[in-house]
Every structure is written in structure tokens, then in C-alpha cells.
Amino acid sequence: MALPGDPDRTGRRPAGSRWLLAKQRQPRTPGAQPEAAPRHPALQDVSQFMVLEREVEIQFRPRMREALQDKVDAVADSLRDQTPVCSRCNQPMKRHDIETVSWLARCGRLRAAVTRYRCPACKDERRPLLELLGVEPGRISGSLARLLALLAVVAPYPLAAQLAGLLLGVKISPMGVWKVAQRLGEPAARYSEGLSQYHADSRSEGASTREAPPAVVLSVDGSMLGMQVRKQRRRRQEGKTLPPLPPVKEGQFQEVKTGVLLLPSERVETSPGRHSVVRRFLVSCLGNADTIFARLYAQVRELGWVGPDTVVVIVGDGAEWIWNRATMFVRRCEILDFWHVLEHAWGFARLNYGEGSKQADRWVHRIAKDLRAGKVDDVIARLKRLRPKTPEAREKLQGLIAYYSAHAGRMRYDEYLRLGYGIGSGAVESAHKQVVHARFRQAGMRWSEAGARRLLALRLLLLNDNWTLLDRLPMVSVA
Ligand SMILES: [Zn+2]
Image (tube, rainbow, N blue to C red; front, side, top):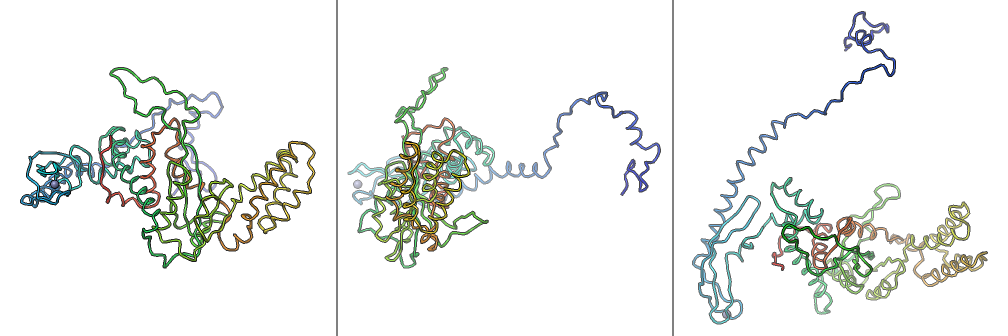
């Protein structure tokens, strides 16, 4: 449809059109044009639908709380005439007192009159109603606690608190979110540590290995976390601000390691050159090489992934601690990460042929091609025939020859590619960044050992798509 002022089909403009008037009022000469005052961008009213949604939320939240309270009361009634037995001596306990307690849930505060029983002999106490409900008096409990922990796992505590307000309509301080994360992170950490201990004992049973895959890829990566200087949390005194923290010094870091387990058969090429895996299992912990390998071993046993014929493919960057522990798997294939191998070649090429030179580029590409073809012995022989001009380059070359010679048995890349094992540790490097860097290594973050350990355990539940496990772990009180 032609609008007024549009040129007609002949290209002429209708006389007296608005276009013409506008043209006359605002001549095109640059500079002479008076600048219109800027207009503040306009906002529209909140949409009617959102107003309705919020009305219903406000109206029904108290009703939900009432309905939930009725159900809690019914559970309390069902326990009224039951006397619990002492968990130590198995004798019936005596009614001690009744206390009214409350706790916070998604729809508000709930209350219950809780009977406390005591064993006259052992002095043990039990509150069967709270045990049955799995709530802690005075605390955020139930699904709200799990949701807050979920926010803490993906965002720093202040941001998590803000998200809680926007997503759940719950007003909570960053410290409140922190507390919930501690109380759920502790059982999550204990559970994964318990699994390690359980599977470390030869009498423990793993999952069935009847459907164990022919090969499992395992790799490990690590990085440093900035740790808090003080063991105790600093407390702000009334009206005073805390002095700034001193800069993190050497030794105030702690290594955190991540291990990845995946099945080479489940690797898919999402787009040319980009690979991803359908499933992968991550384990992560603060601690040494033995700890992470114990975790990996436990996870493999839980999954039933290593049967008598399974080859465990271990991809590493040349760090001895990985190869030393790889021996725990009898049927194994050790692979030196291809990209680390090339990085060493680049180090020499840059020194010998010049930074950014075509020659360096060609030289490294030929090495890469030959190594992929499985010609590691040829490559080493060729390196030995080189005669670099400078002492630095000679030294670098010796280092390169030593590195390739020491690991030649882990550089049969043609074979690994043919078997579909892959040749790089990219999967673990990206996994480690996802587990650790994305949450634990943001600007200025410092961690206590307990805080990092608990949050790591929670984050792994989410990244391993195992978050619902948290429904089956009891919240614990932490100091
Ligand atoms: Zn007793």
C-alpha cells in the first residue's frame, strides 16, 4: 500500500504532500539542522497478563502454606501414640518435653509441636517428627534449601541471593545462601568421599560390569585455587569496615584436580572438527594425585565401566604423577596429549627458525603430520640430525628429543586414531574450566578448604546431571 508522501510509480511526488512540507522546514544543508532534544526511551506498562500472574501468586501462596501445614499436622498426628526406641540400647524411650518449632519453606514458615523423647539409660534424645520430616528447626529446609544451593552452585553468593529474590520470590542475604550451601555441601562431599573409601576396599562390590564398554577414556587436569589466609572467617565489628585483605602470596594456593571419564564410542562430531560426548562423568577434589585417582576409581566402579576386557585409555600431559598412578588399571593404553607434544615442538621451532616465521610453521606442521601417521621414531631420528646454530636452540632441541624419547610409547597416534580413542586431553581441560574456573576462580575469590570442598561436591552433582541425589542426603549442621 502506498503511504502519503511515497513517490508514486512515475517517481514524482504528489504536490503538497507532507514529504514536501518536511523538506521545506528542514533543509538538508549539514550543520544548519537544529538538533532535536534527545528523548528518554519509553517504557510500557507492565502487561496485563503479568499483573494477573502476580495476583494469583500473592493470593495462593498463603493457601499453599496452609495446605502444607495441614499435611504436616497430619504427619504429627500419626506419630502421636508411637513411642520410639533408643537407637543404642533398643529400649523404649521416655517422653521428655514438647517444643513448638518452625522452619522456612518455599511457601512460608511452617510450625509443629515436636515431642522430644529421651532414653533414661543412655541419655540419648530423639525427635521422631523432625526425623521423619527431614527438617531442621529454625532453618531453611526442604526444596527451598535445595533450590538455594542450586543457585549457589552456579553464581557467586551475592548474585545467588539476588537470583533467589527474582526467581523464587525469597528475600535472603548472601550469607543465608552461603549457610544453606554449607549444610547441603557437607553431606554431598561426605557422600563422594565415602564412595572413594568404599571402593578402595577390595571386599566392596561395584556395579555389574556385564555391559562394560570395550574402552573408557580417563584424563586428569588441575589448577590452583586462591585460599583464605585466615582459618577463621573475619567478623565485622559494629560500625567498622574490615581492612582490605593482603594480596595472595605463594603457598596460599591449593591445587584442585578434575578427572573426566567418557566412552570413546559416545563421541560425536557436532560440526566439522568439533567433538562432543554424549555422557561424561566428572570427579573433582582438593587434594593430591592419590585422592583424585581414588575418586576416579570409585566412579568407574559405581558405573560398572571397567570389566575384565575393558581398556582404560589414560590421556595425560607428561606429568609423572598421572603415569605413576595409571598402573592401577591393568589393561590400559597411555596417550601423551597431542597438543602438549606440538607445543614442545613449537617451543624449539620459534627459537630456531624465528617467531612467526613460515619456516617454523612448516616445520611444526610436518612433525604433526608425521606423528599422526605414527612415525614417532622417524621424527626423533630427524631431530637428532638437526644442528642448531645457537646454544639456546641446541639446549631446547635436546629437551625436545628427551621428551619425545621418554614418551615414544605413548605417541602411537595413528593407532589411537584408528581405535577411536582420541589423541588430546581437550575434554578434561574444558571440563576442568567448567567445574572450577567458571565458579571458583572469579576475580578476588578466596576459599576456605571446607567451603571449596563442599561447593565442589555440589557443583559436580549438577554437572554430572545427578542433582536429585541431594534429595536423598540429609542436611547437616555445620559450625
Ligand atoms: Zn538407650
